[in-house]
Length: 236
View (cartoon, rainbow, N blue to C red):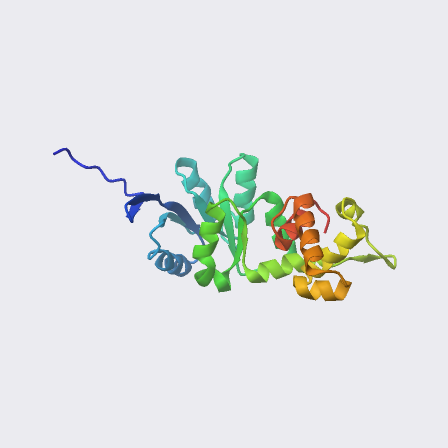
């Protein structure tokens, strides 16, 4: 009988071979890295293949290695997380990155979105959401923890006031009907379809139609996608 070779980057489950998601973790606190590794150790489809304590080490590691997803802390020595993102952007490296940060201010969120990131995870929710975040981003979607979603939605719906008048958002709303704009704002304020139906005196089916039209016109999946669209296009 010949020798059977096993690829340890795969795992068997119910007769199927599942490719493992390779993850690199970068944070300036070894304790946090160890904590994330402990959480991921029970996940059959995820493997930690590298770790770094500063941004310079991250760049050096990716020069010779690859990972499906980089979990990247913003506040690191030598080169911070934003610097690492800028390096990937400048070198045109298509790397999926989940930003990990204890800061959730709007300015930082906008900055990392515009440079390029697949997700933003608040450190205080990392342990409970890291697995979901990795699987979501690996599947090709973006992931933002609840507190970050709230920030994005608030940024999207808030209008700045200049000279006593609302600032123009016409570039964003030009393709939308007045009713779609009304529905959009209520969705962003977290009203459900039934509540919007009562507030606007229209049927629930009509609300759902408007919701689908909004998603289709702006080519997004949900209200968080609308917020991300607005931020990336300098609309808010």
